[in-house]
Image 1: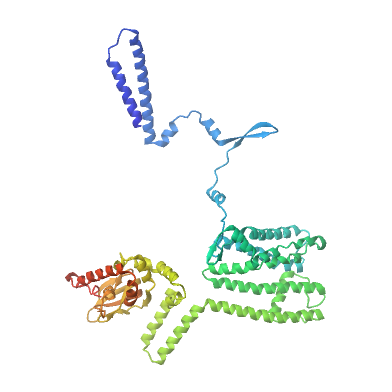
Image 2: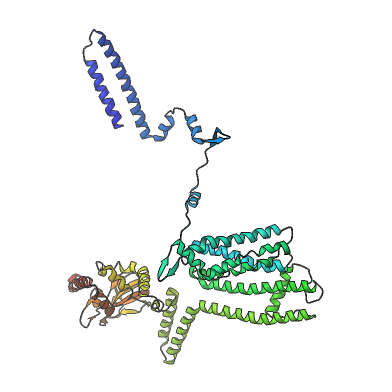
Length: 571
């Protein structure tokens, strides 16, 4: 717009120059008149274009609607069509096709996805999902091969559906062998190997590769002689290692792994009953359906009635008809022996799973019972016993454990530091005392912090005590109290605040507390001991100098008259 206005202004000046000159009587005067008219026309066109541009800036929608286009219909039709030139029988041929609709974002992201060259089997969730598909294919064979062998569910009418499901599972097996397993990372001499050739060669040297190849042995070629017999697919069961790996990955991914363990143990019991039901129908068919009172009589749903028999037999409920033939007696004896053995194993496994899931709570109950027994034997006052029991209950409910250090002590120092940084750094970084100190010094200090829970009314520190710790409020509030009955509240300190830092930095024999601080409600405090801080500062002399300066500044504030009304500062 600015350039257009400048052009219009210059043209207007030229027009004025032409108009101000005298009009000669020669032929040149006629030409000047023509030039002047042409310039006037150009000025008018430029002014119109300038006005149109201004209107478009003011209201772009209206200006676009009012602005004419050279050939809108033709351009729109041209944009909606795509011309393709192909050669058919040696002759060029032009095809005009409609333009496809725009591709949605989710489809574009799927098409843009590139399969990774290496897979971390421990952290990649996509690999866990793939293991789920492989385990589903393996379970198809494990559960339905016996059913198709024993029960008459596979017929000529539905044979194509069974074969479609079988070969779909085989296709998943093949993809797992060719695509996923050769891309799994592994550790060699402490290094994570991600090279394609090394990963493929490593997989081919493992026991799993041998089992995977055996599981795809094409026993189906005997279909030509025996017909479609599901027992010929028994090599598919040799891919059992994927089930163990899937169990490990699921327990690592789930927050409450014991739930999956209970489901898995229950599935073991259901599968043993499933196999027994298949064998019972096979035995009944061998003896003749309905030939005796013991065998299946052929009425109702065959699988449900045989499964009911398996439950009563393996769990030894009783109430079954007595076997009459030698085959029936032998079959029933094996059922009883296997049932007692299998059911006892299942009960033992379920007990272990439930015991592992409640191990922490059992430890909490044992500690609480031992403490109660101790307090009762020494005649501890009832109000003290109630407060101790309240501490146990609140600590367990808020933290899920009694002592965090017992959990973290098993981890390496670096991992303990990482956990401490994630949990407490956001609070400690706001403490003014440690601002400006070395960042690594603060990280080392976080591993020395101890979490302590104080009950409502508990004194964190009392006046006259030797101060050897500094307190950081993680959760809750504390109050600085005084007066003859310690009922006067001077200051309420909330989460993220710190107190007791002067005693932490004081040298010599320490510094006595000059105020009473008690918890207002349940308070979770992090305690830093003077000895732990001294061990850390040995390695960070610059941070030690900075803290010494802050110590002198705090001592100067201690004697400042404006702070005499606040008993918190000298602590």
